[in-house]
Image (cartoon, rainbow, N blue to C red):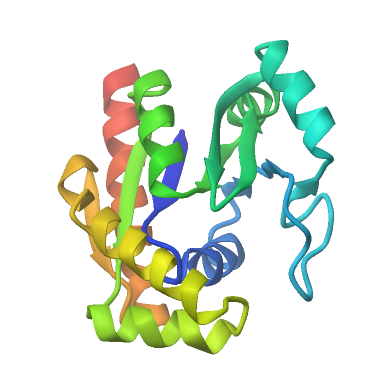
Length: 188
């Protein structure tokens, strides 16, 4: 099963994914490639595979990506071979921006697409400011994009408000339990 968790920047995708991986041994994370520099604490091969712009573009030209996007001037993408290999071994968990999730939906329509929402726009703005990774101009651009992305939630299978981490994880676990039973029923 392919599980996609998406939502606007700052909604808590990374935190929820970390908790989900600890809570559900059936899930394994699908690591994507990026051309951006690592943030403090990020580890190559675990959080992302950090590659040069040249290497990324070579893979685009060879058609190796299941999806790729340019976001805020950097490139992000997931290799089709890596994703398919992971899905054959376990349930693959993908954390991805909204643009990338829409591309995966076109290619993997059988996936479970979960959109995370913040409790409010003000909460989202505060989360982004606490990161301290953006100047004010970048912050405004990121917030405008995030608010626009929030209007896309209806295009996904599930919308979950990420208010309290433990509760959000429980809700997503419930979704996955139901989807696993649905999948088993379809195979019988």
